[in-house]
Length: 292
Image 1: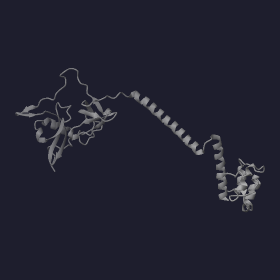
Image 2 (image 1 turned 120 degrees about the vertical axis):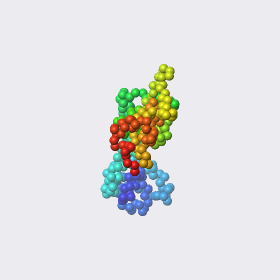
Image 3 (image 1 turned 90 degrees about the vertical axis):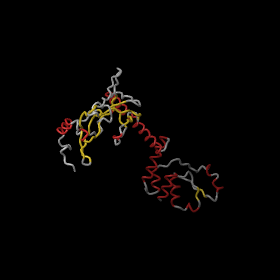
Image 4 (image 1 turned 180 degrees about the horizontal axis):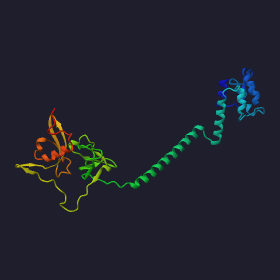
């Protein structure tokens, strides 16, 4: 009976019945003929000639639709949900002239379109209010000199507070994106990624007056030898039992290589700077630190 109910649900009630002698004896077909008011005719697959005039018979009834209650009575109320789902889908199909699956697909596309439009509208509103406090970023060209912010760079200064806000000048090599630039970094900065956001760069305003750019000072002659003047001592460290100092040379503030490590023996002419450094940072290695 379950197979019969599924067959009736999917295919519907036959418009007319051609019954053989064997099927006339079936209780189910007799009930179907009685409820549906069919007029059975003998015939079937082996008597095709007998069915030629059935369509014009006055006793033949064409059934376009039978109420779902009749179907359920035939199968003794088996699988009610199958018939209910079939009835619901038939109603939707007649109203919309489309299948439920097609309606669901169209509804999903409509919802996705509305959600996309709302998201784009929200993004535009955020940009509108965010750009009020923003300035137009500078447009650097290859070869320009820029100052690099020390915000995301670990320097050799003992504390971040004592570090300079802007580092020395660097050359712009190329534009690496809409808001990023590739800089030419010194060799000792090989661990730093050379691409920086435009917010970390500061343009250098060149003077319109000629000969106003300050050049590095010439070396100082000490005992007939050229020496560069030390501006300040930044750090100290022990390397292989030898004391080294990180010094900054005077007059090279715009040079990326203005600071480098020098052994303590090279700072014999700057004892006051070394003394000032150790007075500020007594915990740093010094001349009295034991060599391990």
